[in-house]
Image 1 (cartoon, rainbow, N blue to C red):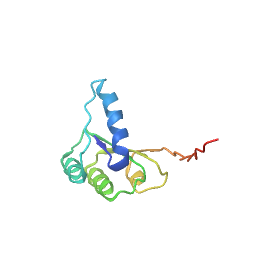
Image 2: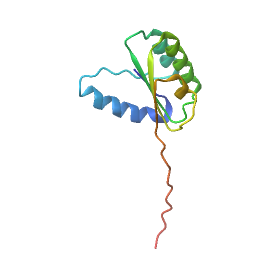
Image 3: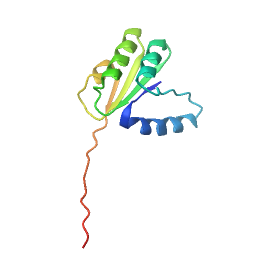
Image 4: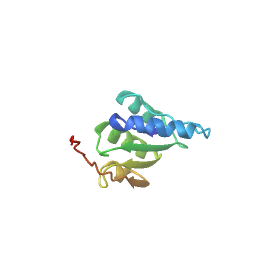
Length: 107
């Protein structure tokens, strides 16, 4: 089960498509309400993977708390190293990506 909202959703969907080629069933919520509903209905045997830039999105924090209370293992992949969701997970993968802005000028 993947949890991703906003700007990281497209990258997550691309990753899921690759996993599906290996016959892995993956789910991703379509919106905030759907994310909470899926988190409430997951049970043991699921693995939750959170992909988020900040790791501090309120709805994802609520989902992580629900899953942790149920004892579901969580992996987080975030853009920031120290965030709330990292504290709720069994494996933390910070992806520190630097944004390099280039200014194109004509010669």
